[in-house]
Image (cartoon, rainbow, N blue to C red; front, top):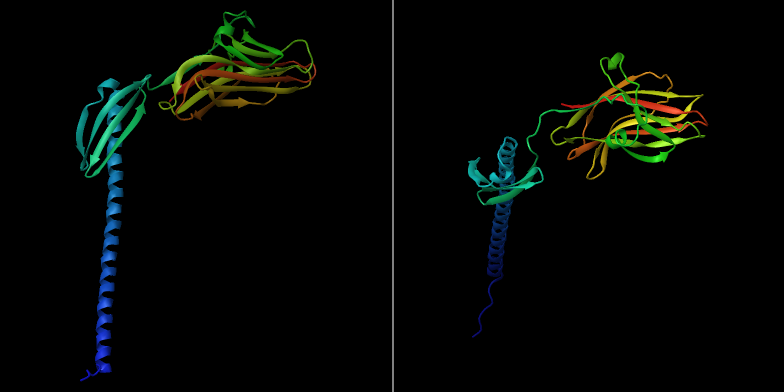
Length: 306
């Protein structure tokens, strides 16, 4: 006997059931995958926030150590401070090591599964104000080495001239009450189209720009030239860092004048971060027109902060 084939209607029913089962499986897999992706995104966001929080906690530890160092705690005594609980986590200052006069601090922080370690360098507390003043002594012009040449070191690019102390003093007007002399820069007496360019440099108490972000300056100056004109008559005030030779110009005057009268320049400069300026430069550029001599005097240099 032969089996009769299934009726077409029964075959269609079986196919429909199979399709339905596959659809349910596919939809279920999609839902599980979607839930898993959503959970991963939430977890990633949570971990990112936790990393930020633990870093901020470590920075709080650095600030604590910096404050203690600036207020008298020895750098090497900063380690072993903690752990301290703060904001759902803990931090501990684990080490302090001297780097010259500065202090390098290490802090470990933990918050849940997140952990980090940060280091930072801070300067000593030091003074809260800065002051430097150069009135210049009343000495004869261009004295021999051992006085001016040792206090204000000369560096030249063009040498047709001389610098030195002058007995002329900015004593009137804005310089009222000052005494002493000034610093003089002048092209040579003989010669045609003489050019004199360079700077004189004086050591000063270091200006740490991490402590003093701005500096107020004041300088008196006067200019003169013989004949009809000067080709160049420039003077500038510059801070320099001796270790790196990095500089910052505080003031520059390029005008040409022969009024032979004292003027005062004042201003405030924002200092470049992470510098320690320990030299003060008076820069100059003098250039004659044929045989016309050129002079510049400076006096009463003052630097203060804040």
